[in-house]
Each structure stands twice: as structure tokens, then as C-alpha cells.
Image (cartoon, rainbow, N blue to C red; front, side, top):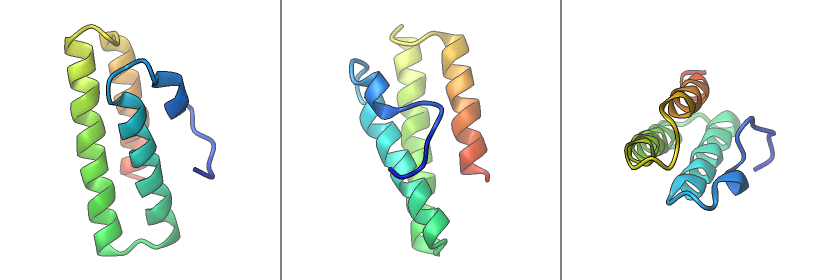
Length: 82
């Protein structure tokens, strides 16, 4: 990752899949910023789906709070629809 983000993957290593999915989301985001081809955009959208799924499930199991899940979804959604 070359950009600075509000939420860093290394801050979530204790939460199942969140760190990995967040890192993948940022990687795909940066790839799209460099070269916005259809295949890279599709990969970025899939990464967005994956992180959304992870956030929802970590919230349901109690690993993250609903307000934090909403905040994280809002932030990442802003990047997804940039």
C-alpha cells in the first residue's frame, strides 16, 4: 500500500479476516487508481463485497460494534464509489 488510509490492516490482525480483506480492498483500490480497466474495477468491486461481508459477520459475532461497522462501511463505501 502506498496511500495513507484512516483504517490500517495491521490494526485489525486480531479480528478474523478483517485485516486480510482490508489489505486486499486497498490493493485493488490502488490498482484501479493507476489503471482503471474493467478487470481491475471488477476485482475492486469483488474486494468491496468481501470486506462488506466480513464487516457484517464480525459485527454479528460481536468482534466489532455496530457503530464501528457503520463507520467502516461508510469510509470504505466512499472509496468504492470514488
